[in-house]
Amino acid sequence: MSAHIIDGKQLSHTLRRDYAQRVNRLTQQGLRPGLAVVLVGQHPASQVYVKNKVLACEEIGMHSLLLKFEADMSQAQLLQEIDRLNHDTSIHGILVQLPLPAQIDPQAVIQAISPQKDVDGFHLESAGALMCGAPSFWPCTPHGCLQMLDAIGFELGGKHAVVVGRSNIVGKPMALMLLQRNATVTICHSHTRDLKAQTLQADVLVAAVGMRHLIQADMVKPGAVVLDVGMNRDEMGKLCGDVDFDAVKEVASYITPVPGGVGPMTITMLLANTLDAAQAALTNPNSRV
Image (cartoon, rainbow, N blue to C red; front, side, top):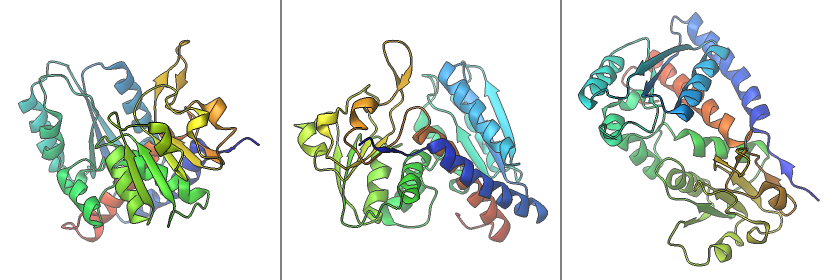
């Protein structure tokens, strides 16, 4: 029996409908939530990503500001722009699209964003709060994964979750979020010996390494929930994930597709974080979220 498909597009649609109502309520109170998206250079994928983020803002009535700069922009110039946005009261969230040109240190840029506007959840203060279980902005992709597990009513307590990937953007925060839900977590990476032996133990398997079809059917425990964060292209140029979807769906109980799975949820969680930042600005300007 084939796995149930976790439809990220449909779940996003449901959540964004609720977010639109929140935007309307905040706007009626005199504060329209605003997100600034900063793009440096002409990276093709980045241009698509920022376009989708701006459209998502417009869809729910949120104010959006798209700032595009040439690839030869200096780090000092970018930091100056971020400082300006930090002090712009119409902007509640700041997102700098990665990757950045070689002359710009991405960590310096991320740390320059006010923690109160760090809706990507990448600032060291946000990361530290997540580590300690304190309120913070959670990174959008793993947060979206957790929302998908909630949507299918999956109880994580006592389950074994295996995360393949250890990036600061997905792997590490995903593991921490799963731990907060009382899952037993294993993190795998490029130096893991016998990856298959690890993934076969997973009640929940999160694949987030950017390697096409890394996860095969014989690597998945029957009945496991499989979340595919990968975004790759196959031999024909078609989008695909880190999971061999057609094969694995015959083994898993639930699985996310690529595209249409985790991707839409990432943007939806960006909207959620921006709304939380706007609410904080309205109720307590000195509060994080």
